[in-house]
Image (cartoon, rainbow, N blue to C red; front, side):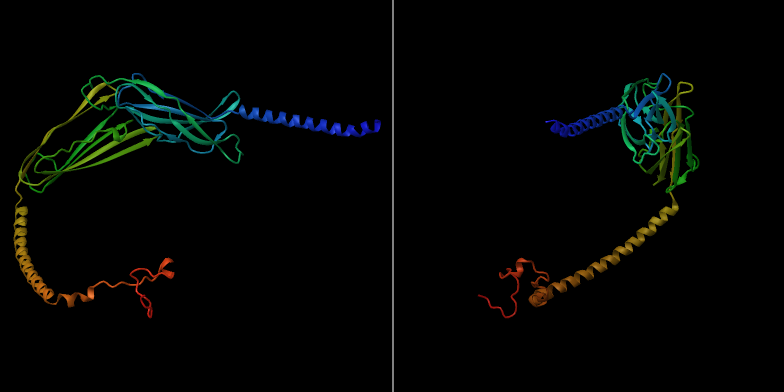
Length: 373
């Protein structure tokens, strides 16, 4: 009995040691899971940058700060919404990189500036923006982690500039410039028909994208050919956006007469003086007279066309005579003439698997020597 107990003691000790090891591994696993659950996650912060009041048509900065617990391993990708009443543009420049420490955790920070313009007044909202990027918790990590963060919706109020109640889309800007050029200048001596007038109007302002400027009206005037071309350009320099739009309009005088190009008025809100500014484009008159060179060219063209018509009539008569003779020939000897053009069935060069069997395909020629049943 004593010997049997002595023999069982090592087994009980081994079982007890195995149980202790199992508890230890379970405890370590729980600790590792708890540590992983307590690891800081990427975050995002958002706020508007601008002074009240915010005017319709004014540039407003939306600041988006991305926080990565560690180090950024890629550029950020923004999924921009299409807000109602708001023109939202993606970041134009590289982000400002910074770092900070929150509760003992080191964060790398990317500060992105998104520009937006309110096209109407009232209470507006920028919906949540989804942003994706990759980061490393430690510089020597082999594989970066993927992050997807979402901003909160941003709500703000916009006022309509005083004096712009009767306007549609209003532009609010500082140092807005307008340039107009004519080649040649209209309103002087009469010009012959066929003369082309080239008109260029260029809008430019800081903190205004070129796409916001309205297209200059070309219109339709009887007797004038009007052709328009637009070019929009934006330039960003150290966070300052400068937008420009240039409209080129060509007026082609087709025939003699007096033509009036109507006047145009453009108004915007100046942020410096906080007043409505107006630029008048006065009406222009084009006096067009007959062009002797154009008249002689038309006469020469008419004579050449008349000669060509007589020559064409002769060719047409000869062709009719030939067709008539061909018709008589076909009527008398049609069967013999058309025999070479009758269709002939040809055997396929690559017969199908079904055609290789015993049954003959309908319409296929019989091999030599085979008799019909």
